[in-house]
Image 1 (cartoon, rainbow, N blue to C red):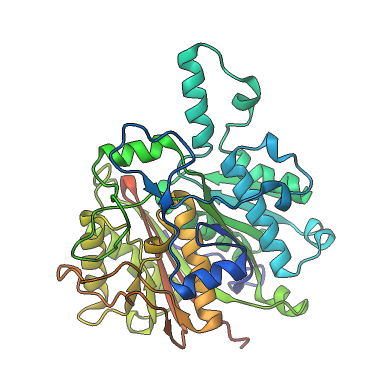
Image 2: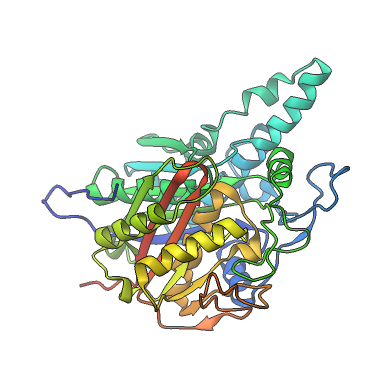
Length: 411
């Protein structure tokens, strides 16, 4: 599947990113997030979100300086789960960053689409413990629905002419949600879309990956010969999308244009990625965007740091790009795997790279695995004039989603 929407005048509307809301372990807010990417900042720390007794090692990319009360105005943060707090706060950041007055936003037809892997996973952890003890907290039970990650954004912003959807396509969910927003704006179904992903650090996810043997003891090293797995993380990335025409009319700053996207689901294996399916998704995205592989300036890879993912994704990249793939980075080396937020934060990083002229680094890198054979921009950001950038997202069950972004030119 690829975005093939047609505007009312028979042509596809151009869709641009004018606002970014980012909450991550390497920076909160677009400016701090950008600085974290440029500096190659690491968000790794010992877990405090839950009891780690019994685990041999317990590092993650936890956000410890997030104050929801300072970033959420209309809603009571105590009535929201952690993931909803993150999504609502990031959406507010995106609107403010876009310079879109609240009353103007409320007058527009809007879409809110948020991708997630676990929904309110931290609340489920608590409810599970309560269930064992025989008493569930009704207030906690009421706020646990994953749909609240998107509906709470609409309530916080006072949106009424709005569709609010939450997409649970695991670790590719952020790109799925952005692609959904892209289609809606491109086709003229909505005037503005707030889209991205959010997930909170929780015990269930950490324990699951730990039992699979895919949690790294100390750090995440995508594409490195010595990599030992992922580090779980948390965060939210929300982008504000609108048509280029609308952005120009109000004098908005444009970070980047979304040129096209594609998604597929091969269902080849419950957890193992499939090279041919990933390659097919990339080719579909290039076709939808109207670009050729040689025009891609860098790839933001899914790049989890596991043996299976990195080699399979690298081979798919080589299959599409031949012997000369572009620079290929993984920001998960810095902010961990934030699940449903991962590709949304990566999409924000791509947009910032285009706007600011740099490629974020893959940190913790010592020796590139010859089975991957990629230029991973090791350890230090690289200045670059970027015209076209590709953002990969892969997920369990064979859910793949690829977005292509470009430097916006008015004509």
